[in-house]
Picture (cartoon, one colour):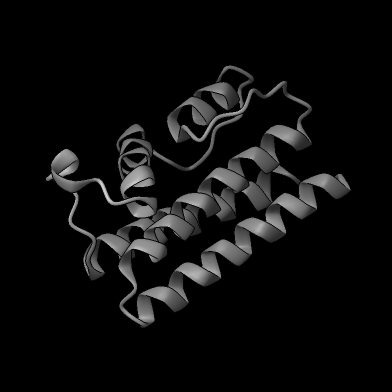
Length: 128
């Protein structure tokens, strides 16, 4: 594993742990933000390890497809990518009525954390 890959995975793991701690304290927006960041960093770790050219993006689905084009399959569905993309901005900034369908709560955080755990485990396997 490249040293840069390990750094990205360490950050991804830290975001995942933070997401869980924040959920335990009912801080839903930052929990969601950290779950999304964990997935993003884990996917970028795979990109770096496999020396794939990467443009600056926060789009989880775009990262998944980038890896798929190189025959690298990560354990995340398109719907899960869409969910994480949908929560990215509102978990960071007040959006008002822009996204009525997202209601940060315990259940949504647990879903996001489960996704992040699966992607992190995939990243570990794909960077060995």
